[in-house]
Amino acid sequence: MSLLRDLYISRGPAASFSAVGVFWGSFAALVPVLKPQVGLSDGQFGLALLITSIGAVMAMWLAPLAERALGAGALGVLTALLAVATLLPGHTVTGVTFTLAMLGVTVTSGTLDVAMNARVSALEAQVGRSLMNLNHAVFSVAYAVCAMGTGLAREMGLGPAAVLTGSGLLIGALMLQAFAAPVADAEQEADGMEVAPLPWTLLLPGGMIILIAFMSEQATEGWSALHLERNLNAGAAQGALGPALLGMTMAVGRLAGQVVANRVSEKAVIRWAAITAGVGACIAASAPSLGVAYIGFSILGLGVSVMAPTAYAWIGRMVPNRFRSHAISRISVVGYAGFFIGPPMMGFLSEGFGLSTSFLVIGGTLFVVPLMLVPVLTRRAVS
Image 1: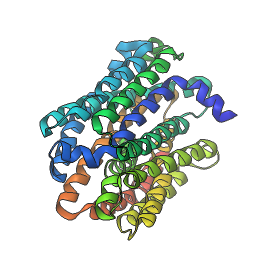
Image 2: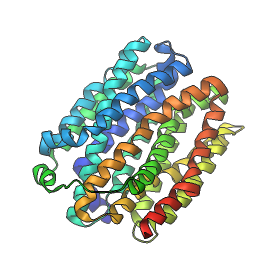
Image 3: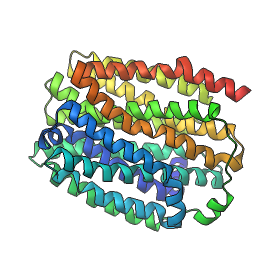
């Protein structure tokens, strides 16, 4: 019952988390057909995503200003813009138009990401309860359902335009909930937020943990279906099961994280979660069969699921309450770059060395978290 109560409390941002999951789940399962539709190689596809990522990260710097300007309706307006942007990529037939369409999606999605995380943080402060893992779990559920649904739609012969049109309509319905749900007073939040003298020795390692988590997550979302179909001869639905399993196991991991948030230290959770995710990525990369690959992606999802929400909670606990919003906005800018670095990095590595090597690199990067970043942040926490 407590999970349902927490979901009710955060139903506004939860609708926006769902909307983001709808697009990226659909997109992940469409990559194998979108890439040839627009006539791009692996490297060119990665470059297109890199270009869109640069614009998105730049927009994130302005996200707090956008939220402040839009006030209480920020989540609704940004969710509506995402619904419109979702319609565009499926209709593109060239690399240039695809890049422009995806730029619209990533700028809108990135701004919404920062705004909805900030809104959850504000709600946590108001009600005195942890809500971050639950809302990230909502994203994962929406992502998994839409990834699998897209795979089935492809088996039925539907193309990217039809699938993303349906996704856009679903996001439009979620927009109504984002508008209707009560939210914190945006003006009061803006007036109360101080610019904190927070050191980058605190913010940078915390942001890098989030960056690596999101990079691993988004790289797997964007390229797991292609890895399964190209290297293990999976069909469309079997390929879509890769990102769908990632989303489902991430949802399970985040719901579990919501339960244990007050029982285990953030340091221990992040350390073991990163090790688990790294092992899963390596298993998926070297899998000799579909079954083993599915196990690898499932282990990866369970581990990576709690890394970012727990890092947010850890940083939030280490700074004074009046500086919390400022700290979260800064680590979000660092961390959300991972959402956009992962897919183009995978494309470049795949072009030169193959997708299996790309996933091995993701696994190695995850091991950086327990070996370097957690010790650095731990020393900062006790200093």
